Amino acid sequence: MASKEDTKFVDEKHGINIESVSDDSLPSYEDAAVTTGAPTEKISPLGYHVDWISVIFLNVSKMIGTGVFSTPGSILKGVGSIGLSLIFWVIGYFFAGAQLAVYLEYASYFPHRSGADVAYLEKAYPRPRFLMPTAFAVQSVILSFSSSNAIVLARYILVAAGADHQSTWNIRGLAVGAYTVIILIGIASTKWSLRLSNAIGVVKVITLIFISITGLVVLGGHTRVEDPHANFRRAFEGTTSNGNGLATALVKVNFAYAGFENAFNVLNEVKNPVKTMKRYAPISLTAVFVLYFFCNIAYFAAIPKEEIRTSGELTASLFFTAVFGNNRSVTALSALVAVSSFGNLLAVVIGSSRIIRECGRQGVLPYPRFWASTRPFNTPLGPYLLKWVLTVIVILAPPAGDAFNFIVDIQSYPANVFTFLLTLGLWFVRKRRKAIGAPRGEFIAWNVVLIFTMAVNVYLLVLPWVPPEGGIYAGDVSFFYATYCIVGLGFLAISAIVYALVIVILPKLGNYTIRQRLERLSDGAQANSLVKVPNDQLAEWDATHDEHGDVIERKSDSPHDTTQKPL
Picture 1 (cartoon, rainbow, N blue to C red):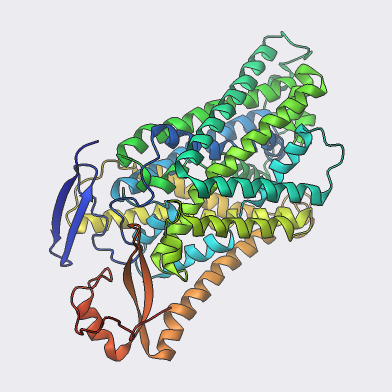
Picture 2 (cartoon, one colour):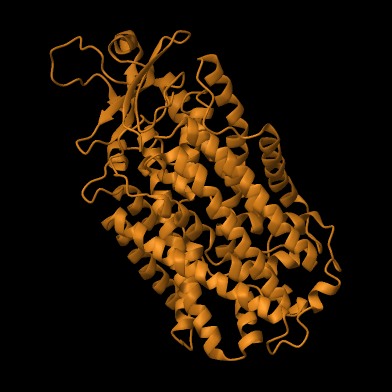
């Protein structure tokens, strides 16, 4: 790592002094022209425990959860043919790679900001002031749960343990217990939670390599499978043209690759973040793609097409049964999937805790000091506790079946909206950097890559509204097929209402203006709090605080300033 250099630049157009202490020799311009949002922590209060190995396995562990073991059947059902199913896995890889390029360019501009989407959207859309932080924070809080993976983990633990009876409350109780253990690990130590995540990631990779090699052995005719080439002779037979089925399949493929961006959530905890991400984030995505592709080849070689179509979550189990033909192999697979699910949840909570922390540091959540604090274990305690509470509620509250699946589905639609805005916003960031004379970034995504990413996002937003074959009640749930889209848009509407009420309407009625105030914590963390400044005191506030909310001059000798009330 290069030695730290103090660098100072002046933005003559906007009259902003840009000071940075960077771990590299290039100016970051992180605060240039955009003065709202969370303050930049040039020295991470969470430490620097994320090395290149952790970068790879944070991504790998989030990508490889249960999807590759269960989704091939539903993807095949959506597209109708083996050939198109394999093509969709390739399309998903290119789409994830295009999105990765977007994250890499943002990272090159803001190397000291964790939280990925929350930080990048804040920088891309500074106006209307506080709108994007408020919208994303509302989504992050309401939809910040990992209940589906916790339930899957519990089911596979019971199967691996040989449990004869799996009642709903046995599964839910075990899910809560397992998730509690994961949260406690994250709270206790970042270093050891990362080491455990890395170790489980190695197990996941070895498992997929074993399935891939076994599939090649099947294709060679050296197993009990009678005709391993049957599914490949007429690979495109049965291909569907139904838009809803194709969209559903692409959503599931996209979900299987979700996690390639996880290491960007801890970017400020990485030494030499830009160089590390440029080198190792693409490696993690490509390695997972190769493993996914060969695992699908293995499934299609060993299992008849119609059995895969109706396999639901049991595709990998059918594969082990077809090849090895005994219950012990299925039990062993269940244990491996349980380990994979555990590692996936651990990687998810590490990354999402930083997202919630960044939302809190922006000031749009109440008690920003609570969210920003790293005490007492040098970990983000507040965000971990929020994740636990919300996940436990969603595990225990909904009835089993459609209601549970529906709650899980609604997480995806707002996420696609924000991904589209993230890509579009990159052009706005480039424009502002050019206006202040910022140098070319260390990584620049091709414009054609941005256009491709936005086109796929539009596809994911539009085609789920196309009715499935069989009518409007023939989707994945027993009620109206697009209900999750409507509810997802409803959450976005709630975000807009919260913003309008708190930032626009109430200040007008109360004759005050919202300003941000910089908070410095004893552990080195920094956060903004949003304060109500009476309009008759606004001129004095602006004269005594800089554009980041930091005090530059005090007009009174009073040790306590009570004229501004936090929101």
